[in-house]
Image (cartoon, rainbow, N blue to C red; front, side, top):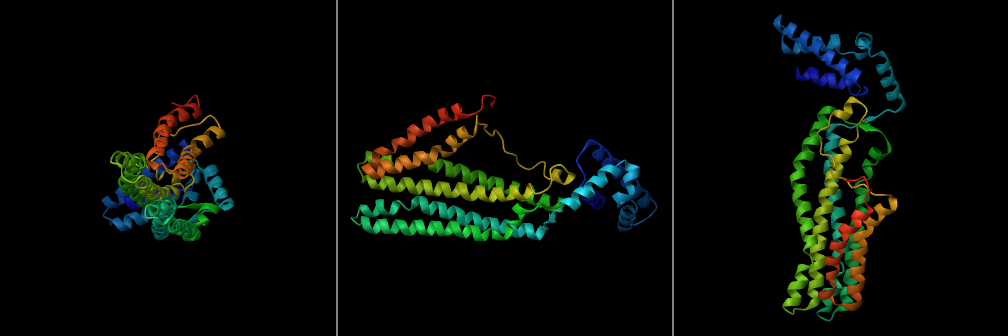
Length: 329
């Protein structure tokens, strides 16, 4: 029966997901089950029974009148001819997932290298080699930018998924969904650890300031912790977004769009008053980071300027509350 159910799903994959079509699909499944059980009782083998059921009930065009779906079938065929969708196979999906992990690694590495690049001049300044540190900083930045550029080439073979309609079948969708759910535990650990590292990045400055150690070392540790934290967040989110991209390929108005209804959905998404408010919130932490770097490099008081993160953390909640829509709860 699983073979018959899978075939039925394929038959209705492009049909509109409406109450009438759902009812007809349920009726057709019942007829197929009755015929299958009847053949099995008569002594037919399972393979023979499945073949007979599919040959008798497997053509939706022939059954359209009996099921009252003539209009829906014609509309589905018209939609398919006007906007044909490329079918992505399971093997292609597996290749995409491998490619996505590779892209995630280079993207996260590129961002991390750009963040920690400033540690070179800070660290080498302790040993009186500030010029060498500045040169090394540009080496880090160059490597980071190169890694980011390479990401574009890694992803180039899959641009068709963005530029043209695509679809995946039920078995492929289930494979992606299971892989996505299995990765959720890893993603949760990465995001949690990455966020914790970004939040506590200023703690070393307090410890170093308390024990009167070289203040430059505090600045180095801040950027190292932030760099590692951002690496974990970017890496896990990039992989997760790849799974989401695959699960969103199917037309949500059709039955194929229901293959992954149980996939993780974003929760508690904040709605903002307008585009300006959304932009302010998006640029908040990058602005704080730039302000911190400017003040720190101008004063070289790394043991003091970390207080900006504490103030920014307290102010962030107030900024979000004032920017979010009035009807958001």
